[in-house]
Length: 137
Image 1 (cartoon, rainbow, N blue to C red):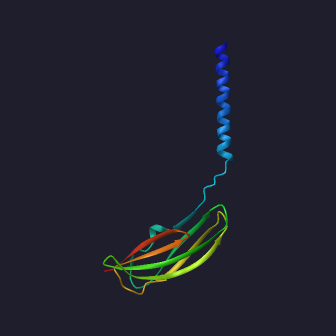
Image 2 (cartoon, rainbow, N blue to C red):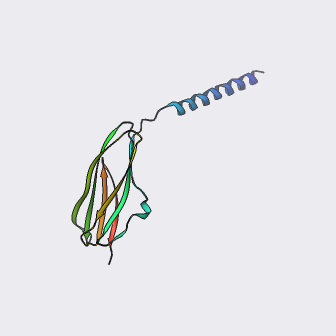
Image 3 (cartoon, rainbow, N blue to C red):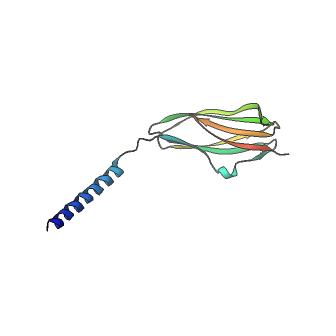
């Protein structure tokens, strides 16, 4: 009889513990904040170039738990024989995003110089993404 009572108490305490843990999991607000910066359709970014016009899209997603002013800088670095030769700014802009807002930016640029490689870079608020272009031989 005492064993049955002990088992019932243990089961009740376990159920209460599980309920408390579930309530804490589902009601505790996470304070982690971050920004997503990524290329749209990244598998179809240009990888080789001729002297021509190109375009790509990138997205900024604000998950910082507050409105954020993003300054983004897009530039291209040209390399010959693995040595940086020239850097050109493509665009530099600001955009204000509310929490959980997203902005997709379409960027066009023209390559007018011939080098071995080019690196297209997007920077915003201490983050960077880039892709490489190889000059056609």
